[in-house]
Image 1 (tube, one colour):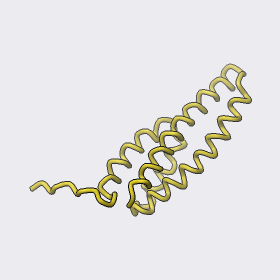
Image 2 (spheres, rainbow, N blue to C red):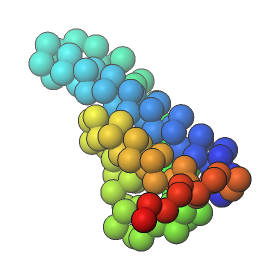
Image 3 (cartoon, one colour):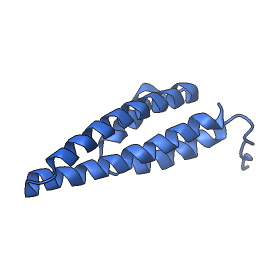
Length: 110
């Protein structure tokens, strides 16, 4: 697996997570304080498009890493749960780094 696959996933995971937090903030202002309806609409549309791109990159990484369906589903859904994508991204990177072509395998401890 090439490192660019992991890099694309990482970038989109962070962008999607940040946009989701911005969207949650906008929703609080829209429904809690009755302001910012236009901003909320724009942010929700942007998050939707970015989430679709995230899905494509996460699915690409998952298929190349040969994840089981449950793990792939969890990674795909993490872009819809505030703060989850940050934690899932760290775990995915730790597991995917050894799969990158050219990476040295960790020594086996006896």
